[in-house]
Length: 111
Image (cartoon, rainbow, N blue to C red):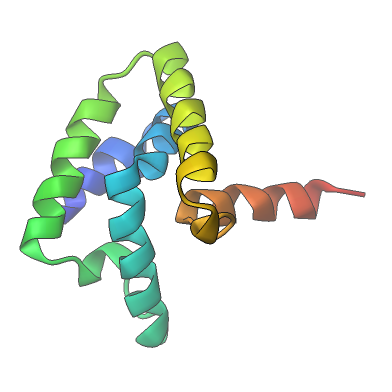
């Protein structure tokens, strides 16, 4: 399951499909937990290596769904998910994996 998730999402050619997947509220909650555990373990392996079987089933189901999205639809889904996160959960603002990944790139690209 782990390898299929990586193939479907991390190796996908379109960044909006990745963004839609990682901004999904259920995926984001799982990934936040996995990244925390991965960091606690000295960043050994990959965050997905720390997923339970139940979490892998949820992630794989989402990966299969998002993999098939048209890039324009994926962009709309990602933007909607990010907006929902900002409105619904101000405590998490700036902490999700998606936000951490994309904010790093913006900071590094800034003059």
